[in-house]
Length: 366
Image 1 (tube, rainbow, N blue to C red):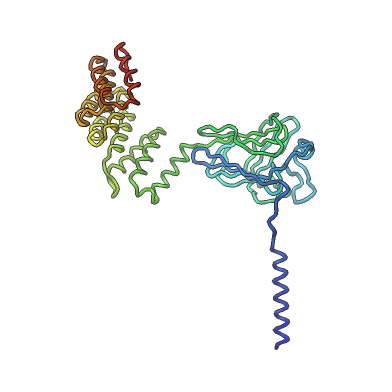
Image 2: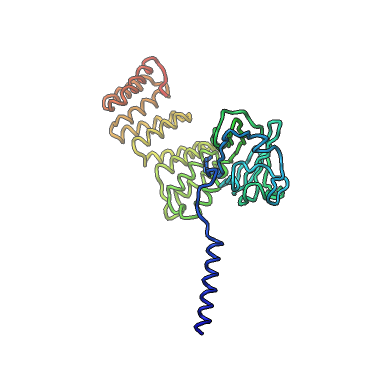
């Protein structure tokens, strides 16, 4: 029995040793450092993870990086593009659906490969396989997307670098730079639809239990031109739920939405409701907003009441001066701005005096 236990112990020990030798891996630096760059467009994150080889006085294009598709002598691919980096797959990830060079691609992580052409063109390949080692196991059948781009001459870049040199509200240009060449491709995001979809989902979760989130959602939809959706969300903030209540913010926003929809009379009713709840500065902004939208007579009524209710605070008189100016009553505008100058902080007097000079010349200060 003792001999059996000894044999069993030896076998188990040997198996454990073999398991450790088989599975254990050391963490050591790679020959080409790993790099990562991320750019956000709207709420969409674009992340590129890649190996960063150096030039080291080598001939890169057409030599170290061969043109076209090649049999690399290892792996299963007989027509492999360049791995767009070094070591394991270069990858690119999108948190939402995007367009690349005008072509659709779904959210996800993709293997990133490039096939260089001798005429200065390049095919950028996005593979559904993002976990293989380099391009050795590349399979065209796994392509999610291919786009053709033009390469450009550039200043020398010793270590291969991905960057986003141009970023706009709805797009970014991703560029690979190495040696004296760069390979750019444009990524576009439908920011409005992405954000609207995310907001709708967020409001179905715990974020929907807070009134201010409905206000923020309605504001975004209003500014995005989605008026019907904005109205639905602001109405939820105003009434109908346990968190709902009338505030200056949601009532004034509803007035703006209705005004944009051409429902002027209804919009002015909500202006009146909002004005009863606003602070001096909020009503100043409400009044000047009415002036900007052409509702100068309504603005005059609102801003006159603001002077009374604020006991003559300087911003209220300045707002009244703007309302009088909008109606062409420069005499009363001068009177109101002089009253405002009497108790305005010094840091605002330069602006007020500048507007006063304009009024004296018969110029509108709006």
